[in-house]
Amino acid sequence: MNKFSWYEAKSVEDALQQVNSTVSEELYQHTNKATVFKSGGIDVFDWVKEGLLQPEKIVNIRNIPGLDKISYDQKKGLSIGSNVTLEEIASNPEIKNNYLALHQAVNHASTPQLRNISTLGGNIAQHNRCWYFRSVDHQCRRKGGDRCFARHSETGENENHAIIDNSSCVSVHASSISTALMAFNASVVIINSEGEKKIVSMDDFFVSPAKDIGMENILTAKELITEIILPAPSKNSRSAYIKEVARESYDWSLADVAVVVEVSGNTCRKASIVLGAAAPVPYRSLEAQQAIENKIINNDNAVAAAKAAMAIAKPLAKNGYKVPMFTSIIEQAILQTT
Ligand SMILES: Cc1cc2nc3c(=O)[nH]c(=O)nc-3n(C[C@H](O)[C@H](O)[C@H](O)COP(=O)(O)OP(=O)(O)OC[C@H]3O[C@@H](n4cnc5c(N)ncnc54)[C@H](O)[C@@H]3O)c2cc1C
Image 1: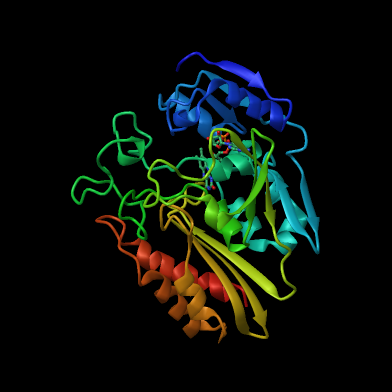
Image 2 (image 1 turned 90 degrees about the horizontal axis):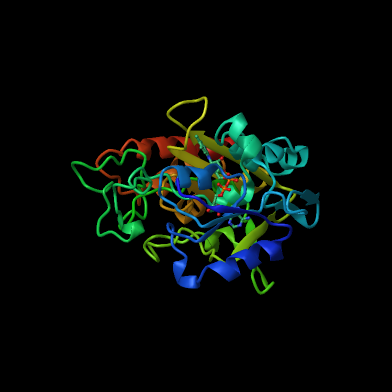
């Protein structure tokens, strides 16, 4: 581990000023960043400990006043500050009552101890967990190398990897909470060092490696997430989230799905269906959405939607099991909304 300085940011502007003065735009890569924001620090310190990141300065944004609030309004919807912990989200009754799939996703993420420390901003901005990407010994494409070690048909350990949109990098995004956030059409509020604010939908926040292999999301070094906002749920909406893991006590997702539907009677009028651990970024399944919209929510139609979602899957050598796993959880999650 290298020596670094520590800065306690007093405000969003103060934090962004630190980056402004020490790093140039070109330095924004996954590794070798001069200045790094630290919120809960779970992912940041994993990177530092494993020698993947040698920061000169760590800016602690965890204690910035005002970023730790949850507010809910029936008309305006939900706002979650970027420093709100996963535990605070899991135990919030308004989130449980109005955004059930988000409550379920947060409750199934990591462990109780980690949820006490992890923040929502850090969760959606964390790096993927591909073991080659996180190994100093493997210079994969995302780190400027010329190959994807996981993709190799004989030597690639790709059992946890992507089955959709996996033509360049086959990693899957680590945030299972983002699966639910995207299904609720959440947006990310971002402030830059000029004090300008932008609001970006979750669908546009993540960057597919096919578009830019060096980026996982649209954040630049001079930007901070301040809050995540979710529109108010419509009166007739229902939701469900299911996650499959190797070990029940805690684990990264092998396959997860969030379903948000608007219904009239038993008929689905509008569906938002997002898959986690299926593709390098949370994947909105337009195929499943179209298959279930304007149909009665029953077993046959749920099966048809799940099959439509998986029709485009292209599993790798060791992750073919994900196709029946996703088929099953998509079907179950749709049925759980009835
Ligand atoms: C064993 C284990 C199991 C886990 N299982 C799951 C799981 O099942 N599902 C899941 O979703 N997560 C899981 N996690 C992730 C974990 O819960 C944390 O959410 C995550 O590691 C990072 O959160 P953090 O607040 O510690 O972020 P940090 O480590 O502080 O930051 C992570 C990244 O985000 C950036 N960042 C932080 N805050 C901001 C901000 N406000 N604006 C801009 N950039 C920011 C940092 O610079 C850094 O690049 C797991 C982690 C572990 C170690």
